[in-house]
Length: 239
Image (cartoon, rainbow, N blue to C red):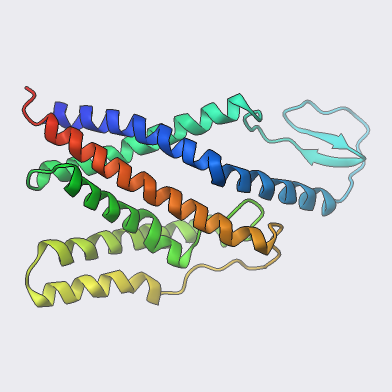
């Protein structure tokens, strides 16, 4: 069984990671690059020049047009950035595939159709429900403190996953009511808000970015669920 889980997850994760990288390159990445130009120009405009009388190594900060600019490591544009993106997506997809195949092992026999339903559940838990309170944000967006957002995000994921499980796997009405309550609970709690507002990303860029991210995530989860379910079903007899 362990071999079945690992093999299904690794193959499905690798293929889904490559797929989502291609989907992101079509719409999400161009929007990110456009938002980064606004973010960079906004930071440069709002930076106060500081006098320095000595050269600073590249790992610290440098001068551009008389302005002190901190240099933070980032992958180079082009092939390097693309490779890091694909690698990150493959590792993330494999982790999600391991989670899905573990669920398959605990449930009844799974094929690609049931795997697709599990994938839709994963999309609802990890993307759709959290985005109702904290939608995807392009670079340059003003956001609340990371710690606060993480707490709300993890709470929403846990409540949504538990609520869906109660609705699907239990027949008692009182349990289903509890499941619905758990689904609604995170959205009745105040979502973390930024202390100040002043987005550098233009408003007309935000909505297309949110749609592109959610559509890409939805396709990713459906594909990952269907493929991992198919592979898990085909490999069930492996010893």
